[in-house]
Length: 180
Image (spheres, rainbow, N blue to C red):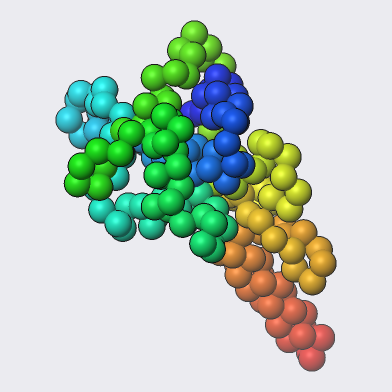
């Protein structure tokens, strides 16, 4: 999914808590993904800006946004606050309308970046805002955050496992070759 400069700048420029922006960015990205999937499956692009229906969708979007846990960042409280600010509109049956999407300028199609994984969308927002500790995996380019014993991560979890297996294989091969 491509994110344009205007889309990123609009969400990033909202006068709200940084983590609220990350959540909006994640909902926006998932909405864009759903539009693409709908167009591929049904041949028609959805024009609505609706999001959610179930508590699972809200839990998943919070997880993918990488917004911290805790009382301050309860998903229901965030959505109610965004509704009060007029950024989203709470509808019935667990749906919200992402009304901020209509305010994003459409005259710029310059792609700022492409999202390739959807379990860590919030890290893309962090990465492009220069948040320390968010880096691209050296093997697959998935964004990861964290340190290992004070050193920044180089690999996502699955690539780190693969790298460790490679190291172990080389070690065992060298060990066998030195026995002969």
